Structures are given as C-alpha cells and as structure tokens.
Image 1 (cartoon, rainbow, N blue to C red):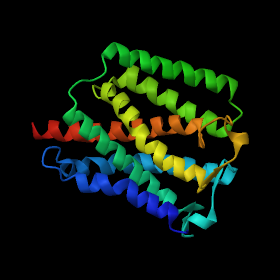
Image 2: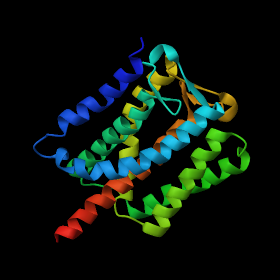
Image 3: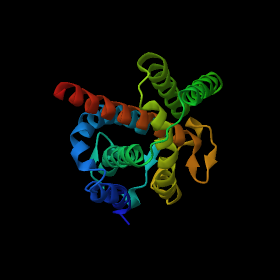
Length: 228
C-alpha cells in the first residue's frame, strides 16, 4: 500500500499530540521549545540521509511510499525527522514529570564512557562501512561534548528516555524494516540485525535523541532564564 510509510508517521505522532493536552504534563505548552532544535537536528540528519541515499546505503521501496520526493528523499522520510523526535521528546517530558528518580551521576558517566569506548572500537574496526562509521562517529562526538564539555543536568534522564523510546522504536522500525519500506545495503553496515532492524539503527536513534533533547532543554532553559 503506497500510504504505508505515511500512515506509520501519522500513527507515530498521533498519541503524543493528543496526550500533549494532559492537564498534568501540559506538553503543548512546550511545543515552542521543540521546533528550533528539531529544525537544526532535522537539517543535519536530512543531509546525512540524502548522502546515504545517493551512496546506496539504503533505499525506499516504491510500493509503500506516495512518490513525492525532495532531494531524492520520499516525503515520508522527511516527516520521519519530525514525528519520531516529537514523540521521543514527549516521552522525555512525561518521564521528567511522572518519575522523579533519575540515573545517578556516576552511573551516567559510566554509561557515557561505555558508549564512547564502544564507538571508538567500532570506528577502528569497521571504518570502511559508511553507515556504521558515520553513526558511531557522530555518537562519540555528541557523547563526549555532552558528558565532558557541557555536562547538562538532563543527561541522567536522557538515558531513561532512550530505554523507554526503544519500545515504540522496535514497533515502528520493525515495521519499516520487515515490510520492508526501507531497504539496507548490508555492505555499508555490520550486517547484524535485531530481528529485522540493523544494529546501527539503535545508535542512530541515540544520536538523534541526544541532539533533539539537547536543543529542547537548551531553548526551554533559555526561556526560563530570560523570564527570571
């Protein structure tokens, strides 16, 4: 069905939008802090996406997209960088409101260090796989900057958000890769999958969330500082 990918996008964002008006979280009031960071992050990842499409890292099944493209990307793929970050930031906001416990600073540092070491090792041994190299390269830079340069207070909660976000991730990405809507060239990745999902996608999500949540928290805190 040509509307498959479009429908996945709509369903991804439907419940976060509807539940944004919950009387306790009031997530809709934070929407204005999402758009600037989503635009910056989206442009970065879309450039990456266009490059990967041109290089044949992945392609899109014409049977499941409506056929409208921008710089060789289907409209649905462009929307992906709006719907998925929006849904994940919604998860982040809900966890921040409902769950007061957060990962200890020492554990956060340990997790970050493990991500840095893993990323460096993967880069050393698999630098010749484009998707793998770029994904882990971006991730190691972001993790080092956030853990050791900016050291924001929200990083503790980010790892919680990531774990919870894996639930919808497996549903959405599971559909995209099993139908398949998105087809991967295994010569450009590790060739290892969790079900039908390439291992790299897990770390791609991690980098995508780091940037989106980082900008969201930055613009939100900047607004608070200007008010006070």
